[in-house]
Amino acid sequence: MFKRLALSAAAIGLLAAPAVQADEPEVAEKEMTKGEKRLAKMLEGRVAGEPERCIRTIGSQSLVQIDDTALVYRRGDTLWVNYTKTPDAIDDMDYLVIRKFSSTQLCKTDQIETYSRGGNFFSGVIFLDDFVPYREVDGEG
Image 1 (tube, helix red, strand yellow):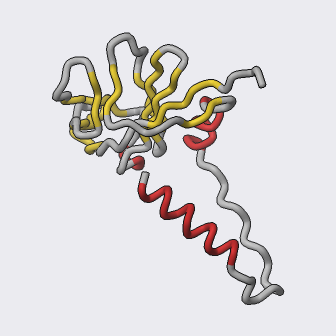
Image 2 (cartoon, rainbow, N blue to C red):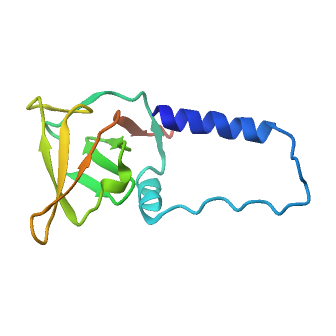
């Protein structure tokens, strides 16, 4: 979360600074990855809430792994997105082994290991970050 805020602040600073060489071609915006596009489609019409360290997992539907991007839990009408500290370790071809410290919650301190489906070999570790709730925007207003 801090990294995203720092990047946003840096981007605002760059936009506010005058252009040094106006005759250089503009840099094209970075194209979204397949995972980022998939997540953006899931989050259409939703707004982010305050990040939380833990989420309740009782009553939630299955976890969705979005390659190189995020983990997403659905609970009711809310999507809980964890961008993780190691998004490159997320691969939907792997399965997750989650070691939770609570039976009813998933927290950023819980341990997640990934294993290949093909041979059950250890393939990595996912370090969780805060969970960001995305709720549907009310149509009234």
